[in-house]
Image (cartoon, rainbow, N blue to C red; front, side, top):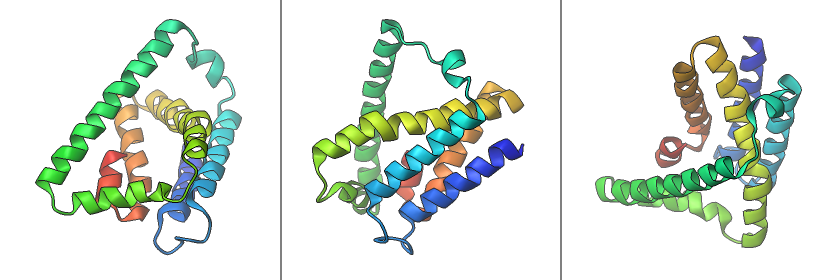
Length: 167
């Protein structure tokens, strides 16, 4: 179990460093996020090197499915943003704080980082390693639920309810 607890503690520390108001401004957020992505991805590969062989299948069906799911997820977040702004007075300012993280940054660089490094690294660590390990320990459904809750929980350091719920 320590093969999952220690990586999760490291992830919690990295997310604390990135999102905490007490550490805000020490480093550029996107530099810290990129560093964290590299650390977690390398840890996942070191702890489960066979991940690519067992779980990743590059074919047009999977690529189309991934793009389709990305569009659906974008729609869910768009609807969630509109609904939460309508339901909760605090939602819009909290969402603006999240989007404010990109202010002053090169949009092309952020797009490349998110597409090539941060997005894949988070998938590799959170789904490829954490969710997989928890699913093998308990069951696929329990693994999914616990991994989702832990992923949301590491965002707690932001003290941003909307970010935690989106995670």
